[in-house]
Image 1 (cartoon, rainbow, N blue to C red):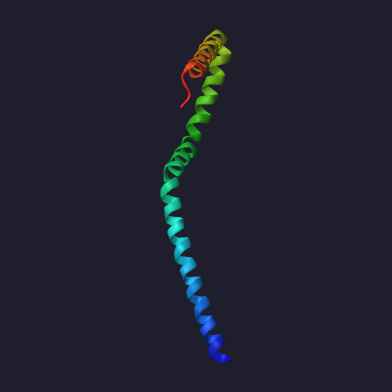
Image 2: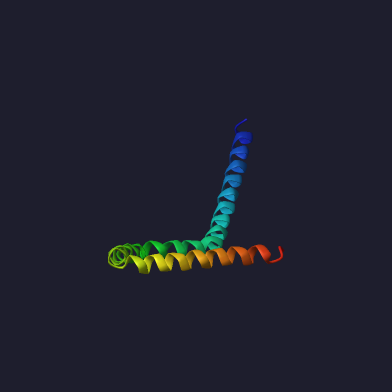
Length: 93
């Protein structure tokens, strides 16, 4: 009885070790495939301070020059509308 139990225990331990190796390989593949997104997220988080500073400067600038912001908002909306129209007319793949 004890030999069967020891053999079963050894088989289960080998199975567990194989699962650990499979998980490790999967983890490495996952990290390789998502490295681009991770680097982008890290860059975005490191730029947070500068984006906050730029937002503050833009807020002050918009208070002092409201026509400037309105003009750029119209241009942005026009560019966005043009892009949507072009995208709708392009053939689907």
